[in-house]
Image (cartoon, rainbow, N blue to C red; front, side, top):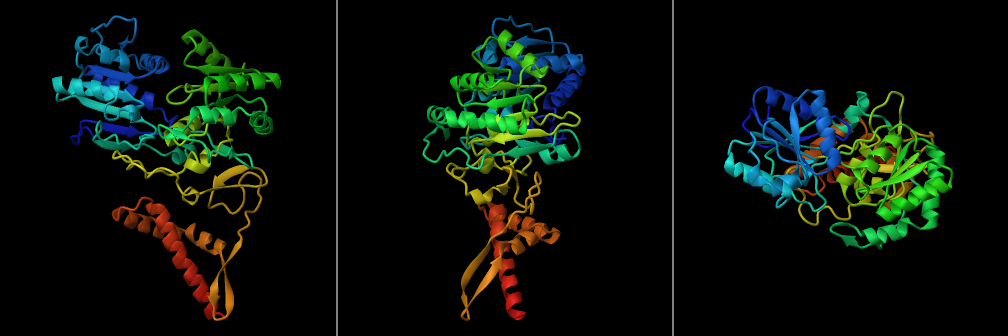
Length: 456
């Protein structure tokens, strides 16, 4: 529909695990049937192989463009390493369509952008189709330099409700790792400082204890800060009687494939990963994930959580957040607003924790949405403390926060919140939803106070 409407570069946004590769493979099969030349751009060998396997399922004749392989111009469809293409720009036939996998990488000045820019000069009619689960960059750069419209797929919450993604439970230790003093490097936490914190024996032991408590043998991916950290976590799990291995991009393709196969068939309880099992990397059999890498990147966080949300009948995914990523970014199924324009520099740093509508049960450690009055995991009631306000006519009035929260969660409250958030967006507020909740909450508390005063 977007292409029919005249757009030349639509970006499809659909959650991790929703089947984006299958979606664009179907599109490519139709393009090939109609004699159109297509190049699919990806940036890692594992992605090239997964795309190629999916095209085979659709019986699409194709070849790969990758290091050490001669270019074969005969097939209409090519699955290409973007880094190989940029080195062979003048030796590759310009396509009619270009599909960019993990398209959040296609920012200004990127390798993807250079390839598309070159092809566009030679073929002004080129159609570009991007796919991603997370159209947001840590730097705040927009993707509007590469794409001209967004096509939104279903949300994580909708996919869970309809049985296409697994339901989940999230747990965090009572005291997540303190990152307040850690320096930032390129917008994210310093890897060196993060690794030094995460490799403390107390934290590694805590990871084992929580794994035993909530997963105890179930196949789990540990997302680590560095290759050394991943090695140490794997060795720690082995020392505690579990079958474990670490995986990273420095291993040979054969070794990575073997570890993945062992994990998928249940021969490994734990796979510690550094910068590999995240975006686009398909891992079968994962029931749990352990966040051991703190990050300011929402994209990285959602990609990691998405690895364990693959649907299997009867499965409930378990997410162990040791580093406070849920406090920074919300829950996997938190509703999010995406924009091609990106985020102005400085707007996304140090968000107010109250803007993230989650809370943690002190009894069991489960993390859930703010609107719950009882822990959905253990049933413990969330007690709301009464707050005292200024003196009025010589007495102190008590405003109970639960009255406000009950109203905000009601049908009427949700409608008014949406309306006010729209007003906030029109006014250009940085956090229109937070502003709306603050304004409406203040209004309702004033109404409660006036009503109590009138009732004596």
